[in-house]
Length: 328
Image 1 (spheres, helix red, strand yellow):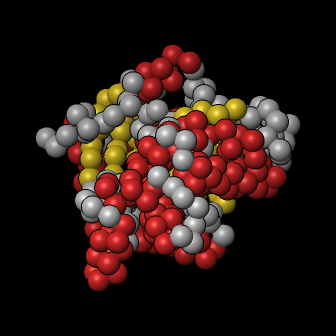
Image 2 (cartoon, rainbow, N blue to C red):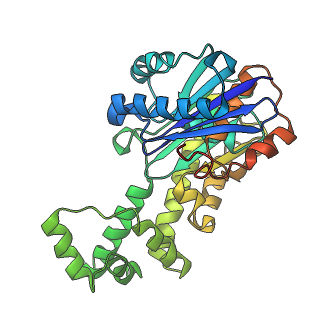
């Protein structure tokens, strides 16, 4: 029996999952921050903790793992891999691969080994895999480097719209009452001065308010979400063009809290509209399982396994790992 290790190392938590060659979950482990850009030493400790916890639960040795695949936040450039390669090598697995965590989110969201993923959480990112196995990432480095949107940006824009509507510089909007209310203020004026005095930025929770006002037909809110969707679609189109996916039938996987928890009616259609200008045969697929599933699938495929529908169904049960990855 062959065993496979998949790891999802993110900024807040790290998951490690071991399955057998049929896709059956054997064990899982959990650690904290796995992003070396935040704290490389802590990331190394947390990744090792999650991996070794899963290995102990499974009762396996390193040489029992046919392939280990690591999806890692911050694995973006060669400068990052110079840090990550020795970090992962120290774990002692005979065969490993390291990719950006966007890639494992893509593989987790589709039943094909290729496609495009659009991520909109705190920030935005986009990546793709061609049928030939070529990978390309577009974005993920912030506004200065071409990115547009994300939860932080949406929260800020909703806050600005509330202030502008109150001042008369912007169009009237339900955000003028909704944003202060969501933040615990009786008026925009009180919110305005409080935030100025304390030099605060609006929290991500304001995005939920933005979706609520959009659902009430607020034109300013609807336009903010439409623009977010269009920009995500433009990034997906850039990936399609780079990888030559124009005539390919593939899934455009949507991941990240804004796209998976917010009401898709106000964002998703605009992503698809822009993406289909370059790839008319693409379809949207919302990620519903833990991204670490993609790491396991990629490990299997790297080892030469053909992932079957039955295997995918077993792995699809991993919509949450909070229980199975609990500490021993």
